[in-house]
Image 1: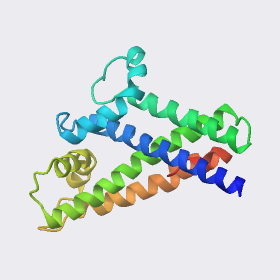
Image 2 (image 1 turned 60 degrees about the horizontal axis):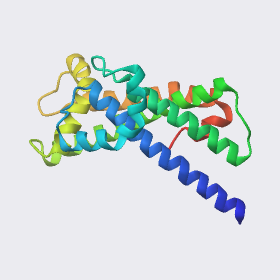
Image 3 (image 1 turned 120 degrees about the vertical axis):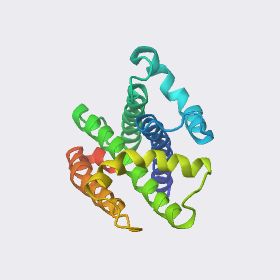
Length: 197
């Protein structure tokens, strides 16, 4: 009974860490896609993640162009610490540093792909239900997915009302998830179990 409670506790901690990591990667992607910083949702994400990002901003400096290295670094360190703590509590001891690093990178990639996956689903639903929605959430979703949709649309332009680009992007996300994240997770060994949500 005690071990089941312990496992449930570890699972809860890992899930909470992954949700926060999800928010950190969302902040990173909003910056990378040059989404509206003053959108209330963007502001909320920045406010929630700022305590984790602030220490890294002091030595990595402000955002350089599109990429916020401080946010990326804070996500990596947060996941590394979480993996080490969970492995210690679970009784696995200290994993090799290489496995820890690979596991943390896989977790970041996994979070980024999940954000794009859910944002694409939301975009498709919005395009059917409310194609001209001006809600801050709808605008943010469009701004977030546009940088990955635009190159595909240039290759596969919409056929009248039918836009096939989301299907191509979904396939690409699944391929990257299966090949890249899958390989990283396997390479991380026991650490790989703690990668996904």
